[in-house]
Image (cartoon, rainbow, N blue to C red; front, side):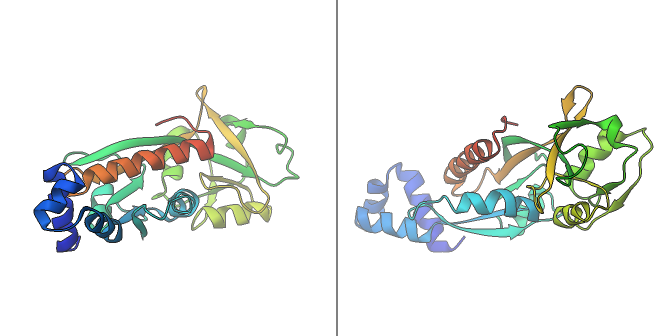
Length: 240
């Protein structure tokens, strides 16, 4: 965060109002408001699939007076590492501890993707036991969809080929190489099936994490809350 921006944010927080901060900084209130809008820049860090399917569509809904939003790819990074890399807000599935604050965003499904001409294509869900004998296309171990899958199948024999990411996994499924297990949005005309295991659907929990000591922590918290509402509306998903 540049020093001038930090000074404006701190003065506004200490004064409690923009008008009070403007007096302290010897600026007009409209002038300070314009400076705050111009200087506000918020960087969201997230895994590539989350940036593509969640963060980018959210950015497209922002208004002109919202913070200018950048993104930071954070594949394989913890929330703490993502924030240390320069993000103001980290979005992912890994929990965080103090001094970082976490906000649950949504529970999102891990899908079994089949082609439209697959015998299961007319169904809404498939049982885990039905999937295990099938040829599967899995993501690398660092992906949370893969981790959720491995947790569900622990102790059960299963095999699968590994794809570099969810897009490639779905491409292979579209080519008839197997059933893709991923949390990405559907591509290539594939049909998503919920995976039922132990009476519930296989899922991941999306969280937003930021540093509670950040000078703009209140602004970031409000932004995270808006992101959560967007995700839940977009996917008709429950809160995490």
